[in-house]
Length: 68
Image (tube, rainbow, N blue to C red; front, side):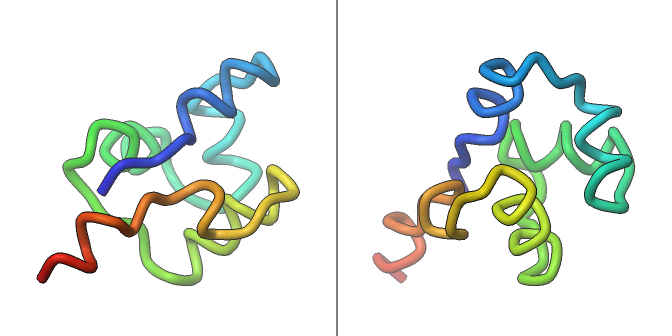
């Protein structure tokens, strides 16, 4: 799944570690989500989107998921 997390972090000059601490996860999880190796749980997706003041749909690209 594609996300805008890396782009949003860069805009706000946040490290993966800082975002991870803010949403209650690990830097490794943020890395895995950014590179598409891991799909965030609904709760984590909500926390990340809420942190950036956006909706889940504005952060996560579900277009590929709809093809299934």
